[in-house]
Length: 292
Image 1 (spheres, rainbow, N blue to C red):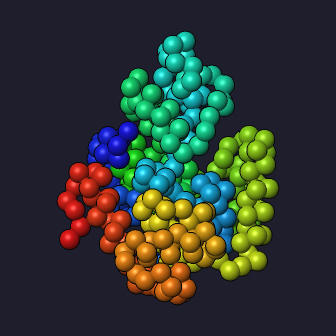
Image 2 (image 1 turned 180 degrees about the vertical axis):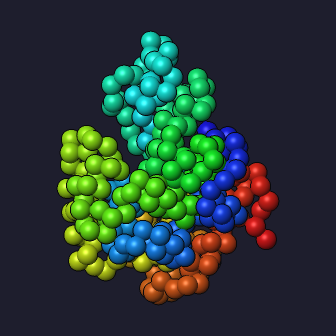
Image 3 (image 1 turned 120 degrees about the vertical axis):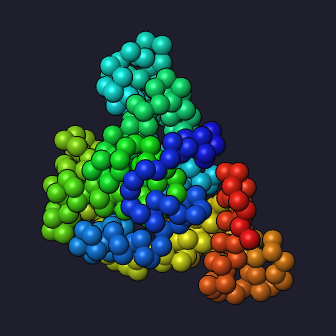
């Protein structure tokens, strides 16, 4: 399923410029990160911990579709169970049956979209914060179509939606107090302990606090390397072996001499080159205007 086919409903409200980014799948920026952090009044490590647990700290797949999880039991509830008999893979009274992550979740969503578009979009969790589609209003949107459009636009918009939802649900205070159990109960639901959600959040925060925190420039480069068809490993903002190898491969692709491509340190010019290359590809993918 293409980027345009899900998000074509159009954004009618939500998070201003973040929701109107001019490139689908735009990586998280310092401005976007700081805006969310300031809204909630939390330390940087807290935001990173929530993102690490919810979406493994990355909001997009290599094909620029947002990371999602389709919840068949939510679709069951929102459609009155009328599709259970013929489509048990996407409509079932019991939670579970998720299958593989990544593209497989979009395949499940596509099957549900063919049955009931609104219920399908409302039955998936979206982006860095894995905000459920049915929570569009507390996340700051007029409806689920607007939320989905924003989730396709940028990680800044994804993080803004997460922050808006946390604020609307009164969960900023538990975050500021480091009360992971109270936050987990409000954010993940009463069954949070079943998956040790609070424990995983606490462990992620502890690990991140040991530092250093992810580097947003390195992280943006990693995501763009994925978009370029290369493998930087985890999009974690850390310049590890796989990221260095992927970066060298990209430099060689652009004609840089091999010794320098493999040896020199990561620089702002690398991110700029990746941005130019991947922005052009992004506009071609969605049939939009190519970057100059």
